[in-house]
Image (cartoon, rainbow, N blue to C red; front, side, top):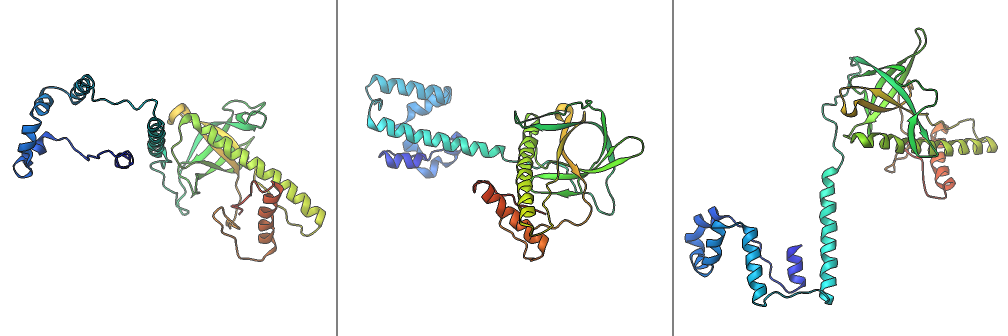
Length: 301
């Protein structure tokens, strides 16, 4: 950027590095002896004053001598200002890359032959408040009144989330088999509910399209197949070992069997012409038109 500015405004670009040790070592074969003679005052000042102090004093001397030119109020000023604003925005964007998603450390998928141990937690069910766009404790829910056991290691991993086996204890000896999904990346505690809020809103929207699609299928009497969107809820697990003392997981019923992907968000479409596969593709197509070409439900499996 500095080189670009120098060329644009007919200036001179110096790609300099200040290192007194290197100057001392390379003085004999780089002609720096002559440089020292010409700039002896500057070098002596640098030995006893900080660089910022020397710069301020040199600027003061230059201003007194009338060698400082102001560009305020000129056309060049606004051009340079906009250029520097562009640089500032670029630097800010570059710095923000340091906040890119970071994988959780120490996550290892459990072996199908040797499931990981289950750990018990008290839990609270939370639901999406559509009116306010927030995830809140469900009405009539007893805080930490649920008892769940979750595997210490995930059995699967998606693009955004780790997937864990989960069992919820019900009345008597009944158990409900679930899966719990948690971000596979490090998320600030204050942003954890926001993560689930976005996915819950997305799921609610997909359910709306599915209901409309199923109604259209029934009206057309083309097939008995239907699209079902799994209902996911958010469970807050009381876990003193994590930041904020709580883990937030998207929880849904466990489906047995082998998962098969019919399409994806990168353009993949299953080549099969079987009825259920064609229904999945038709649903994606339907959601695109039903949303006035603003959204499309994909990654169907």
